[in-house]
Length: 165
Image 1: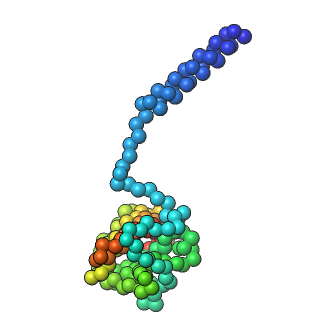
Image 2 (image 1 turned 90 degrees about the vertical axis):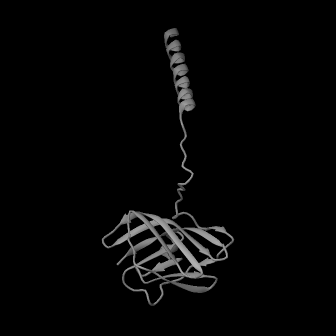
Image 3 (image 1 turned 90 degrees about the horizontal axis):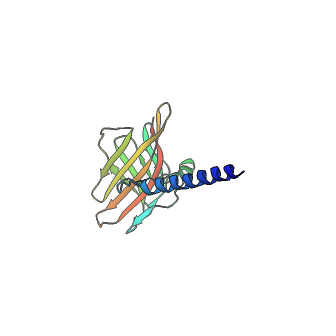
């Protein structure tokens, strides 16, 4: 019985010491540039000097291949979009009740690290994301969209959506 008690005591002593040493020697590495955010569960945008980005449905002139993004998965399923483009001609947003149409140039499209910047005289839109799922002719993405105007007002919102034909 005494041996069992000593054995249990030593086990406890060494297991606690081992955890303590691991905790003391563990390094925490952070990357100040990388922000991981689940856009599917986020409901509000991050706002600086507030650009009132609103949801809208598909414009009549967009049909066929397109990209369309919502602020989160629930809005996407309800077809409430904050960005729609037609793969190279025009992009659409709705700001303060007005639909904004931004002419686009066709560019390279890297589906693994989705990145796009478009602008007109008033608005610059930057989209960064990653592919989370690929179906037959459709790729699902999540990431962030930054909308900035000439006044320096800026809105950053999570996005979730798809590009495809």
